[in-house]
Image (cartoon, rainbow, N blue to C red; front, side, top):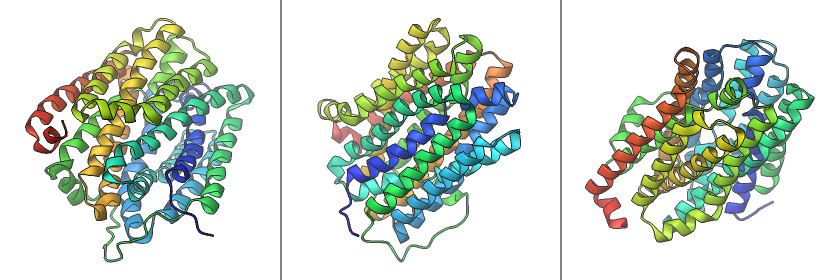
Length: 396
């Protein structure tokens, strides 16, 4: 059975998978707090270990996909993710929940491969739009997933886990039959480095004359958002007394904004504004949104702030990713994007750890204010970098 590689195929695959991810995310912190009596910092560890596994495995899967193709590793990761959700449904202790999130992180290490798939089937001119497809899949997954998770939590948290597993296994079945191989010129000569942490490659990527600073900017943006991955739900539950359903709706609102922006609006914005302007604007909106979240007061107030935050995030990330891909040679797409995804995952490790620690020991405002501070740094770095970088000046 042969199909032509397409953006729609990878979009559907990532969307279904991320739907399962989205179902679980808003209720995970409240489940850990209410049912398992885990501390705020412990919840930060639970959230962070998922990204720790991505940090370790993203570069390996990216390089393997350069050599052997994208499809096998997308399939393997989807199946692993489904198994992790089954384990979540039977979690009764911190360690079992930790194990489920570790497996989910290994399965979730396919984002770099998915981004490389996009690079395979798009031209450099279409790259930003293509990366926006991944963002739209994330956004839509966060539209429907959290809402479904919030509703299903009424029937018990294990039901939520089984629903997430069902989505991942559905994505696996769809991919098996309808997702073709995109890497038709596999780099057989590539030597795979199976070390989980490749410090040399990391340093090489950061030192890259064009890509390096973009990777750093992406890291800061992701870290800023990661501060609230666990604490946003805790803010709603402990400070505002929101229900799981209301928390799910808030995540859904952010997802709607992301889907609208990255699903089509980003293409229009990219034509009318420079990459510099978009990154600066996105960082500014993120700074405002993150800084105001702990002061929203009511559900409506928090929802309005979440919309601003959603716009900022949805603009910044695909533009930066598109630039990284444009400035990377074709044969290195998998490894560079995999390394970038890995560093992004490391940011998602540090963010929840700091967020949970700050929430518990310094006050509920601190994770959000930390994120606002770092997006301010991104804002300033972007202004300085674009003015001194020939490649980006030429795009303006």
